[in-house]
Every structure is written in C-alpha cells, then in structure tokens.
Image (cartoon, rainbow, N blue to C red; front, side, top):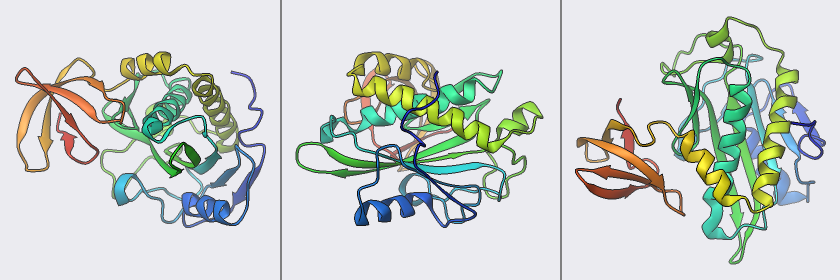
Length: 250
C-alpha cells in the first residue's frame, strides 16, 4: 500500500483526550473538516466500545484515534458496508505485523489467538438518502502487555515480544484505511464482502453461543445480511441476530 493521500493529512494530535470520537463529533458539529481528518491521542481516558462498553488503554502504549469520513455514496441501508471496509483495513494492518492469524469477530472486533487486539466504533450521521458523515473510532493494543479490566485482551507487543513505534504504526494504519475505503468508494461491495467472510471468526465452523435469555446452543455462521445482522444456522434453521443479542462462548 502506498502512503496515504488524504487520511491523516490533517492530524489533530493530543497529549491526552477523554474520547477521540466525542472530539471528532463535536468538531463536525461546529465546522466542515476535510475528509480524512484524524483526531489522535496516545492517552485516551474514556474510550468506548460498542453500545456503551468501555475500552481499557494504558497511557502512551496504544493507538486511539478517530477518522472523519464523508461516505455519501452509501445509502442508510448500506452502513454495514463501511463497517466491512474499516474492519478489513484494521485486520490487514495488524496481520502485516503479526505471524499469527488475525480474524474479525463480528461485527468489528479484531482477534488474534482468541484474544481481542483491536476494537472499532463507527458513528454515522444519516440523512434520508445517504450517510452524511462518519466518525470512525479505532483502538489498537500495541505496547501494553497487561490488562486489568479486559482479561481477554492482547497486544502486538504481547504477541511478538517487540516494542513498536506508535507514530510509524499509525501511518501504516492510515494507508490501510485509505486503501480499503477507496475500494469501498469504487463500488467493490461484493469483493469486500467475500474477503470479510473469509476473515470472519468461526465462519462456516460450529461454535457455542449464548443468547440474551441465557440459552446456549451450537451454531454455524453462514453469513451476514445487508443490515449487518449475523446469520447462524442452529439445528438446521437459519436465524439472524443483532449486536448484543448473541455472544460467542467458545
């Protein structure tokens, strides 16, 4: 991948910040930042994951940033297409720095050896016809080896015993994000979907799940629908689940 042309060209870098997504959202409400503008800090104090979950990150050890995009070529019903592109970009970036296999755990957590190494939170502003703007929040565990509140977490350093330069990695991440975002913009939905499924954790493999009622069952992921719901075959019946309606047990 070549050096990025527009992602990270405008970079707001902070010594510390409560939440890069919150700052980016506020910036969008007050101005018209260039597409690809990045809000970044190596000391994020109140990072968030999907549906209000927290994100643990030690100061000056990890990457925490948000990218402002204007994917107005996507309709509201195509929001998950952006999720696929961003997930693939982060996965690809990490795979280049690891020897172990890297997977996407639906919908957009990045896993290596059954441990979470990165998370993504995308917040879209939608009109009736298209996605007006998107704030793409990304947290990547880099040089932190021990996690107090996230026992299932890992990092690049924990996986490799190497120390990584955060600024160099951040530039590599920008390039990966731009590459996959431009593929999405060119209309390569089918190709991105194929790759997303190939990289999806437990795709076509039977695993144990638990639903919101606490019921556990064996199921096999067979796809993701247009709205981003996971499709799982359970006892021969295909069922769909939204975020937080089901969790992987093993």
